[in-house]
Image 1 (cartoon, rainbow, N blue to C red):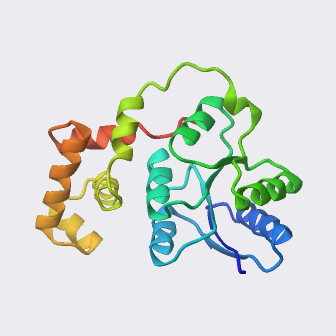
Image 2 (cartoon, rainbow, N blue to C red):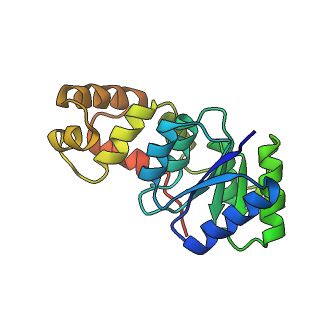
Length: 210
């Protein structure tokens, strides 16, 4: 049975290495490569993958909001973070937000192969330091509320972060302006906020520190 892997990474060399590693695990693995979250979510909406390898700091990823969006777009599919950030706190946040693994961009090919093999087998892959005892995340409540948003609501909120008005958002997302307003009403209720600025600040709390 064919194995389909989605690689979302804006570094061609890293993406190529991941594709090579995947084919070492499954010789005829099909690796689709995109360079931003928007393209990744578009592909995820059109078909189911066996594994998603997601760069944590894509240009349009908005930190962990990108991970949350992808887990909603591919429910039940393992999503592993690919990152140059080696902070244990970041690894733990990825785990809390639904990642099945965390692979360093500096990892040798052998480690990438082992990680992909384990993920395709249904396992989890995190560095040992991800299990260190650390202080709790400074904004766990905001993160939990963001995770409650539907895929459509999260898409609207991510688009709103660019500063577009409702009419422009409707055009960009291919929906009606009343639908945008309805989504915002639900977003405000779920996040416990009263306006768009507060909602965007909640989203920005998921950004990843370098």
